[in-house]
Length: 72
Image (tube, rainbow, N blue to C red; front, side, top):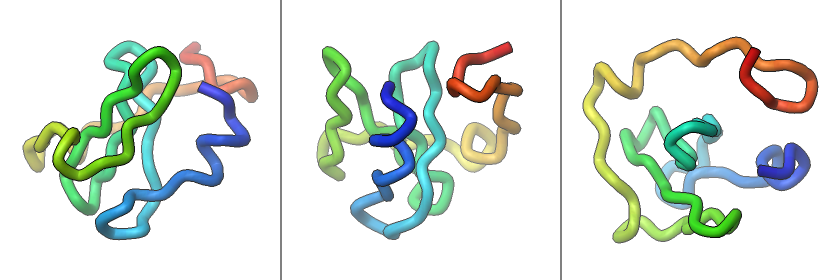
């Protein structure tokens, strides 16, 4: 996922920040507790396409990343 695009995207429900989960190919909105899918490199930012996530999943810390946004 392009870092510049990611910096521009917000949750369509809460307008809050999103966390990119590379392995799951999802953008996580912790405040809305939703996971938006990324299909063929395109974020699907529709609430009805998002997967609900538990409070525990929303609270998980982010893995460390390098300057390119890749997991270390």
